[in-house]
Length: 455
Image 1 (tube, rainbow, N blue to C red):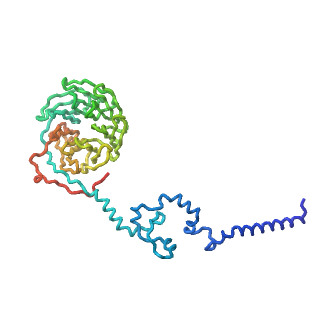
Image 2 (tube, rainbow, N blue to C red):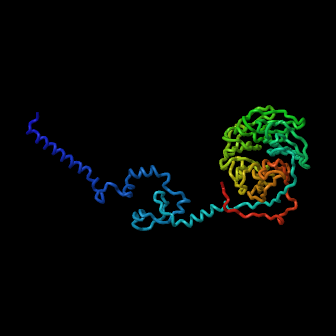
Image 3 (cartoon, helix red, strand yellow):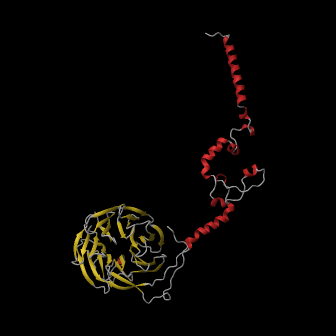
């Protein structure tokens, strides 16, 4: 046990040690308390920036963005920073590159910014003046089908054309006289697609009965069936150079068939709804499909995969049309027609004004685009400028309901001078240009539109 006399001695010894440590600490850290402004714990930003450790940290974090780009720096106000004035003793110095961390208010640069905005906006205002086209007028009405005329195809020799309808028949018509040449029966549901081969005496058809048929036009009989679609086949197209047939339908896929062997070469899957229309062309994208999922897909035929997806449309894409000489195409959804440039699918322009469900589009070599609506509305456009030079409504056949005034299918003949239109009143109407029209009798009604959308 420690005695009571020893305790005060130990306490005195410890007290001396504590006092000695405190005085030594004050001597070692005397400079830490020698701070301006009463030794406040937080220094100013200027003092912090002079600290070598802080300098390294700032440099590591902001070195890449320390100096403004020349374009932005030119728009900054010409004021010297306060810090630069203090360091130079108040004398003005040569303007240094503006730092991002020291950017001042940009009010004095409003004139420069205004000029830049005006210059940037100029290209959008320069619109192409549309080419003058004569108006189109009704030339002939052909009756014979007992259902909606859903498909049309003109043969390469431009002597006859084929039509497919809801009455399950395919009819061959003389183009010059409009007389019926032949009726082909074999489908058990609506015929939705037709194509005539330019290299073989073949006619291809597809329908809502899931069937894809190849007809020999020398014997007028079916010689091949292409089996594979799981639901109705709504569209069909032939490759212009290869012996390939491409079909699309309600099962949401496009199928590529070898014409001769009937082999299903590719199943182009990717759409989430009905493939409503498709077109083929010589160069990539060799297949373009439009779907009710509101997208347009461009396909690499060799790989059988998507090259690109165009998602600009807000509603289902029901019609596609490729220009016969340009490497461009158009797609149509309800109230919206958009023009695209191949091969990358770059957006070019909108065709604005046809506010209807657009079922069909056709383009001829004279840069005329036709669009037909579900309510019977028809629009004729200048392909280059997007100007609508004629709009009218079709007239339903006498005895038909007004509701049957609907455009279901369309195609130009090989000369581009006749437009063949299949309608919901079971008729086929042939339109031609008014040969008596001139720029004086029908002047171009066009004013530049500054509010043209670029998306």
